Length: 287
Image (cartoon, rainbow, N blue to C red; front, side):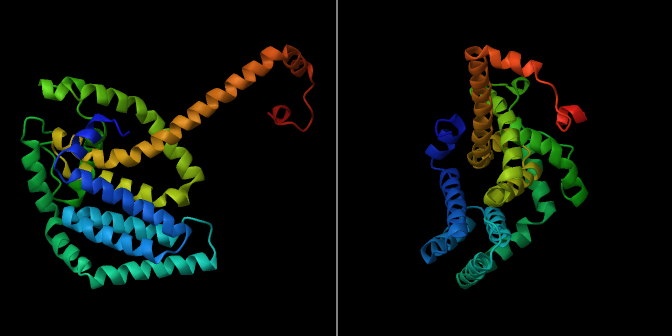
């Protein structure tokens, strides 16, 4: 992931993307640590990280704060009274700290303007009129229109640019990276499936944040170039689930290899297993 071209590109330039990704990762790391053990130091740093986010992009502050508070309410571990009290204390402390620093008031003022779907529509329409724009006929100024724009937005956010959309040498440079990303996507789905089934509490903050940001960008983005840039903020977390999927596939292959080696070393085991009668209470008998 550290050598993924888009992540290297956007983090090496004097843009907001590098510090933003750092702050997002720090916020999630501190949330996970606070879920395990109460620490005033980590809680104070988390408040500072959230307060700093609003100076870059206010909507990231809202989404990350929602994900953090949701993770503390749900809990990263099994429910215990002491754990619930600890998490409640952290939630109240974060709320009081952000209120004292004036962060919530500033966020509310910005949300009043930028949260208007008509403002989002004007910005999106300007993006879609560019050479690499898409969805010019989409209108997100209403709730119904915003919901309808989500499928097209997600496809372009996650998978664009497509080979048939390449019109210049600069765009063609992204194709090798996109081929790797498209190959990794099944691993992402597999990793998400495993995480939701077996590690939901521990990954709740990541799942909530990435879901909210993906949906928001799918509505707001109307340009392939902008979507390609903003996707870097999501790839950092997507690759966590890609890694989970890769480990699952690798373990499955190793299990098959070990089984094949065992059969080759002891072929009589296979012949003996074939001759064994099916017991009356076995699942195979029942089927």
